[in-house]
Length: 164
Image (cartoon, rainbow, N blue to C red; front, side, top):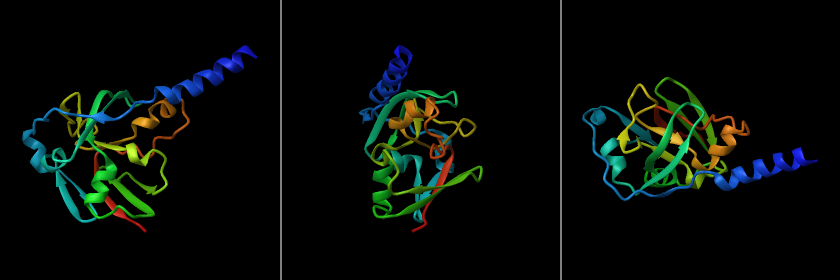
C-alpha cells in the first residue's frame, strides 16, 4: 500500500513540477548563419530575426534527448495567429530531416507550446536540433515518465502547413 501511495504521489507531483513559461526580457543576439534558415508557416517565411520580434518566453527544463537548460522562443500560438492559422483542425509539422507529424487543434498544452530558437541565450546549432525546435514545457515530466511519446517535440522544424 505504501508503494502504491508513493507511486501516485510521484506521478501527481510531477504535474506540479512541470516546467512553466515566463517572459524572456533580454535581447537575443542574431547569429551570422541565422539568415540562411527560415520556418515557413502557411506560406509565410520567418527567419531568426523575425522570430526574435515576437514576445519571447523561457522555460528551464531537461529533455530525454540530452538537451537541458533555459529554452527561449515565441509561443507557437503567437506564430500560428500571425500566419493566419488561429483556426485549424490539423497541422502538418515537417522537420528538415523529413520527419513529419500531424498535430490536432486539441493538442494538450497547445497554448504553452514554444518554438525554441535558443538554449541558454545561444541560438541552436544546425547539428544540434536547430535552428528551431518545437518544445512542450508542460509535457516535460510526462515525457520523462514515458507517458508522452514526444512525437510533437519536433526539432529542426522548418514548415507548418494546415491540413484542415
